[in-house]
Image (cartoon, rainbow, N blue to C red; front, side, top):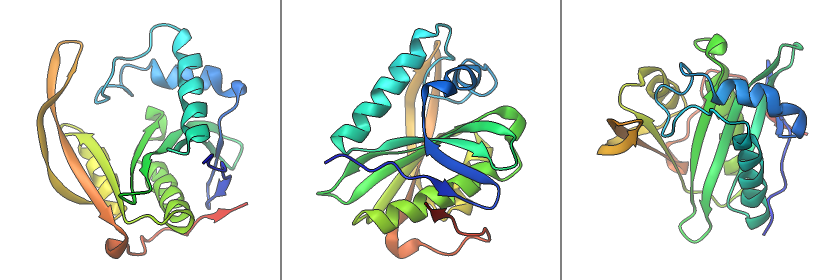
Amino acid sequence: MEIAVPTLHTARLTLRGFDRADADPLYRLQSDVNAMKYWDSSPWTDRVMIDRFFTSGDKMVKQGTGLRLAIDRRDGGGFVGWVTFNSWNPEFRSASLGFSLLPETWGKGCATEAGVAVLDWAFATFDLNRVQAEADTRNLASRRVLEKLGFRLEGTLRQDCVVDGVVSDSWVFGLLRSDRHEPPIKRATAR
């Protein structure tokens, strides 16, 4: 069953469905070596990746398994990055959360604010019991964001990624419906 793509608003951000006008800022983000340092794939080097990203996102929505939302600053600052709610499994009542933001926005609370918005929407929209997230064990900033969102560290996947010949471990975090608490961030509203 297709997922209705929401538009979510927070104090500083708007989260919305992607459109083709996002191609250039998306490519700038995904091709940035610093932004992709702890990602599970190499930085983009070919603009064909933009179409693959949009096609796979459209497919998730149509199949009802998830979505990706572009993140914009409400003050006219433009594209900040994106967040994904994916791997939705109605039988297990579980899904995954991920995000990718431009380096110039790091440390300003945008990932946490966007995460709160998506989690609020997901728990209100789906019969969701568990959300999982993974982060490279070298990525302390992502760990802090996930902990602020209420996720608990559940374990480590040893040597689960090999990107450009570099082997790395990943942390696995889980957030249960019963774990949810009110982060110190204004809750999002859907339009």
